[in-house]
Length: 115
Image (cartoon, rainbow, N blue to C red; front, side, top):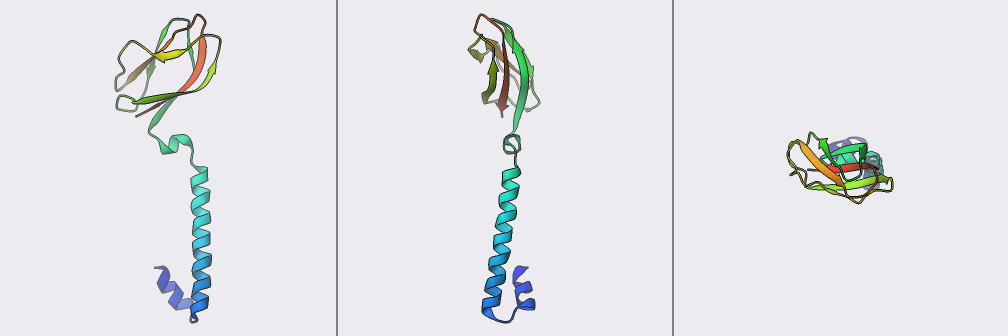
């Protein structure tokens, strides 16, 4: 425990105060570095489908391993002149989701599904 270290190494109160200040500043720096290193996927139970091509007017079937029916989705990249892309008419399941390209040209998307 930290207080045992303080008693062992410091006699004067101001020295213990300096030690605690240094210790907690280092701890906060380590915590900050760790939190900044987290990726989006580290924070959410999600499935990313990258570079998915959906033909004009087509519904795409996407297999996921979330173990539950996803509750949300975010399209993070979109290219092409088609679209918009909406939830497909087929019901989502705990292993598959469906997206439909409503436009007249194909699109390429990256989408994140959330549990």
